[in-house]
Image (cartoon, rainbow, N blue to C red; front, side, top):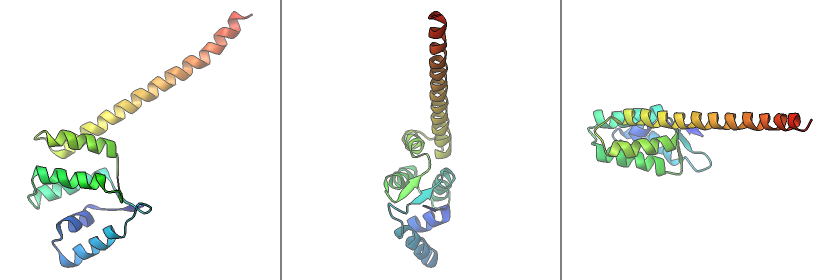
Length: 138
C-alpha cells in the first residue's frame, strides 16, 4: 500500500502543472488492487478543502470527486464507511465536509464502543452462569 498525500491527488485531479501533474499521474496509474493507494481522513478533508477554496470547485463536483475516490478499487480510503456516511450528509447540507466527517466518525466510534460494552457484558454473564450452576448442584 502506498500513502497518497493531498498534493498528489490535487495534481492528478486538476492537471494544472505539467511536471507535477505528470508525476502524480505516474504514481496514480501505477496503483493496483494488489498495491493500492491509501487516502487518510486528513488527506480526504484537505483535498476537498483545497479543491473548494483554491480551485473554487463547488459542492456537487466535490461530491463527485469524493464518490469517485471511494469507488476506485485501487484506492483504500481510511474509515470508508464513515466517509460514505459523511458524504451522504454533506450532499444534503451546507455544512463543511470536515464537520460531516467528524460527526460520522463519532457515530462510528460510539457504535463500536457500545458493541464492545455489550460483548463484555455477555462474556461476564457467561462466566457467572457456570459458577452459579456449580453452587446449585452441591
